[in-house]
Length: 416
Figure 1 (cartoon, helix red, strand yellow):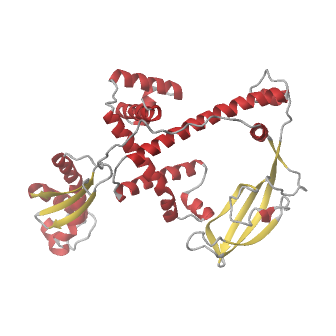
Figure 2 (cartoon, rainbow, N blue to C red):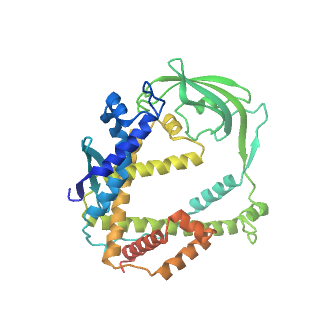
Figure 3 (cartoon, helix red, strand yellow):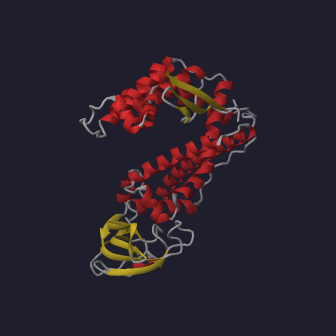
């Protein structure tokens, strides 16, 4: 592909000799040579015993950063992902690196303004209003612990201790203490949650289940036993539709259900309009991207997927889960997760290149004054200082880039 560049950089002479010396000093401290304390053996003695080749790996580590810097300076290329580096040749006189640099692929815009996409109109049904009111009641429900004699029912939250066993051995990642499990949430494998219905606080039960056939490679279709102990049972008590409920919702002027329904209708309509706007924008981006011509390297796609997986892992951590626990519970291993995220990764990359090219084509730019004003506005909206905002973004240039991308989106959305 045209955007793949292979560059050779040779580190030789005094520079390479200096790297070998650094490698020797490092290695000399780690080895024991008869007649010398660690770190005191002369270089010639060390090389005679271990060979100069034993210094190469560390010398490469000492030289790689400078080699990369030279490569970037000489090639003037801007990589879009971390360049791949290989050692082509190495001896006591020099090392030659090959850097495989992937730059932004060529992008040829198609039509991105006159896209002829019809935008929907927001409509709200009575059923949607009633469902929303019930959702609000659930949101403001009081969580109460059930009596000791009460049994687990659908939609209850059971606080459980559990431990899984496969082939008589404890299942790695398959245990938990004081784990809150909503019955009916399908968090665990089929049969787990339904198997708890009817149990009371303090009850213990062994669930004999089977992993789904499409579960993780090493567990799919296998029998599994879970020893479960019920520590607590909690249930939601929904609030009455009265003035206290209206006040909780922030509707002090609402006095009856009919008035509440009108307020809820407004909220649903505004939400639908936002959703329609988002969908319309995505449809416009999708159409404009499909009109665009760009060839994506597999390396660029993989890099985006790995970035997405890392973001997903951080989200899981905020929920108190590790990626390993997630794969155990869902049966989706790292390879499947990679496959699932690939289409979205391709979409993200194409949209990014589309917006960058539109910004270039439309000559979108902002002055330093405009960027600083935007940064100040954003900081105020987020309730943080400008310094905190810039620390999060990295620099004003990133804020400027974000502004350009948003302006490009607006041009695609409006056609103007």
